[in-house]
Picture 1 (cartoon, rainbow, N blue to C red):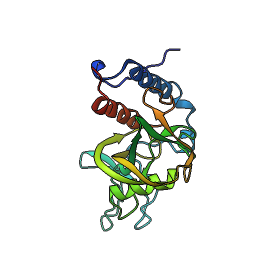
Picture 2 (cartoon, one colour):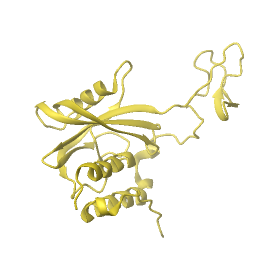
Picture 3 (tube, rainbow, N blue to C red):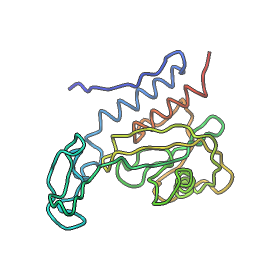
Length: 219
């Protein structure tokens, strides 16, 4: 059986050959084995489905109806007017590089237990993305960080829980002790030329490629 594999367009002249090969392996591994992910624990649903059967405001059964050019789950009671807008969920994290090695964490919880990703997580109510990044790095790695420049924002569609917006900051370690803490089975630094094959999300793979292209250019 043949498997289709989509490779991000990355200028070959800008990226070391071995690093390009690692990225291709990451994408192939993700596409080949995506049916083996623990996504089965999450309900498959159409983009317009919110997970609600009944209105959270008045308990009336929701219906699908066109609103703003899309089918959405709405409450049929005009006096209620609830409409579920399935917006992406913001997340933030730290992009930590030390001695030309990047810090990644091995996931301890679904989705994709045992896969590697940046120390990152969903924003709490009232948090600024920078606060989320600092908190998540501390919770997952035990490290205290100082955020550097904003790195990039990515839109993700391969998390079975939700569509996410990932906000990444470059960060420097200022304290703490590196260890696998909350939500992590393992934490470690990887050479950019020896990245793990099982990186959990396409946005994280793209972020690694972007960093390599911007900061590790070679003649």
